[in-house]
Image (cartoon, rainbow, N blue to C red; front, side, top):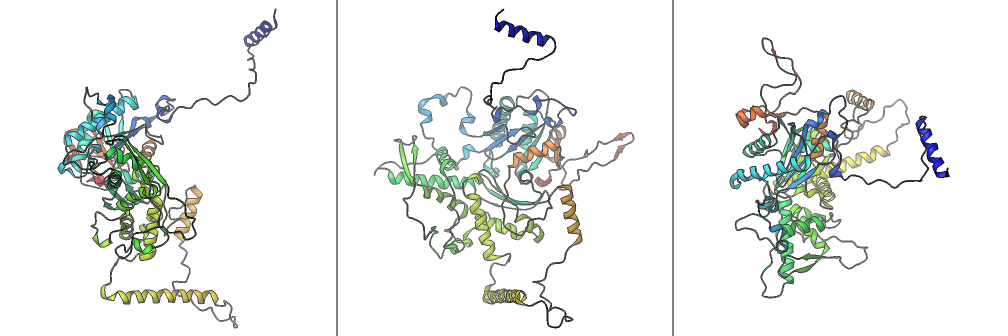
Length: 568
């Protein structure tokens, strides 16, 4: 018998006797390929466990004006993000996308159509909005999400829906109607996007700055409750329009004389903004021009000791232009759209309406309108989210502008004292000098006198240490004992906190099984619509033991009526 046959027979005999043969050591094996994130194994393919994976009965959806995200509870990122553009609205038999000339053709905006209107699902102004078209767009997106990305069985699953606050009732009714009829959901739980962004940041109180497409919403959240909200139109739509104006001006300057004026399409402006758009940091010099722009020249960042280097340039190809061309643009000029659209340094503050304030002024006024204790929590937990927040340098610029605004103005709600302005400034200066003098005297004073029986000189109330609150100390010790940091550990300073987004917060809430305030049943909504909701905005979700009639009991946590919460 050959030596190879002897080894095989020996291994077979050992396996028959119950002894597993050892494999030879081949050294470190290469790492196996990993499954992409969008094709990751969902929790409903795993072991059911003792609870049969009750969290899989939920589907998490987030709806915005230009996108829809969908996924399952417990996952950090959504399974899909669908947009609403002209290519997603093609009819059956429309094969223009495979035409070679179609991709190189610049699409012109229709007459009377606003900037980016074809790429929106809805808008807050319903006067010129076709709700039937919104219903068809959303129905198509829901069907594509369930059949292409979710791959679920026929079992109906509840939906946790993340919506922006203050959405119109007619639009909200259309969205719920589509979800109940297309997705066949037995119930829908609606949660507010600022609350979910706060949850995704690991906070209970925060100031959520949502820089979206049509508007920027600043919401003060205290203990998972919305306490104040302010809005401005300075958001992604205005930023994209400013970028298109910049590119049009550069293209027309480089065009030969007598040529037709170029007009950048929305797709081209959005692509340039996404790829090379950025926001300039707050300049260290000429700071007064941020608050008194009418008196000074535009801001230019100065570095006295910097070495002069050639200004970097960017080459932008425009194949859809007639003829196709390449535009050479200075890299610093690509930050001008964000400067004009979001901060507007060249315009005096008294020329703005309440709905078009720059971002830092809107955040400052929101903090100024909050109560003192809530302001202390929110100013140290500023959460900047939204699609435009991913612009490089924007978060740092917003926080720097806000901190400079607080240092220059303080927390005085009165902006002008009129004829008493000089007297008020003198009083502030005198008070500041007296406090500094008392602080210096307290530091230089010898604590021990020649006579030890004499008590030390009393300090003013502003220089004395605050009294220790025994209740706060007990709560802080209890929180440390339970492993959770105290809520009021940081406060009184301008600080930003990162968040994973509203969808991640909704995924976490759905996985933990937290009961929401706004829970809409399918039968009740199809029977009464939004008219069946009560007007109560504060509803307790604590299970109560009540009796509906003789021999009939209500389930734990079941309500006789449902409410719209903050949307009422």
